[in-house]
Length: 179
Ligand code: 5GP
Ligand code: MG
Image 1: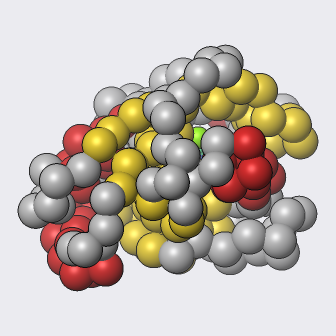
Image 2 (image 1 turned 180 degrees about the vertical axis):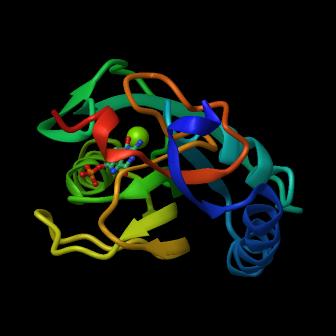
């Protein structure tokens, strides 16, 4: 697995220190709010576990299984593999996603939660944010790290369902996905 990585961007210890900082911010911002964390699967399962254990507040959690990527390219449409999600009507929602790229996933989910599920507010937390022009007008409220437009894997992020169990985030060697 490690041989397939062109370069390591963030080691586990760097990721965890950043999660300490962000959990502190979230703890301050949500101390007086009833809120539900909705984590977008599969990519965010590892950092969800690490982040949530750092937040010292009562909260509810649910996961939403969604996909948009095939291989190393966005399919351009969002596939909801699961149709029901926790009742968030009148509650503040904090969305967790692994990476903000075109913005289609986050904007689709945000508007669904606001318009169909009647959430009181929806803020989003992404571990990584790609520095590109987005297809959908959306930005994240909390960002772990800003990265260049490279295809990354590890710490939950996959290429065709592999590499999610790498402890760090790295750039996948181009020859493995570009033919
Ligand atoms: P968006 O809808 O913003 O284009 O893409 C969001 C989703 O695409 C992410 O949740 C993630 O699953 C996938 N994605 C985007 N860029 C990358 C990347 O560099 N590596 C991996 N592994 N997935 C990515
Ligand atoms: Mg994802």
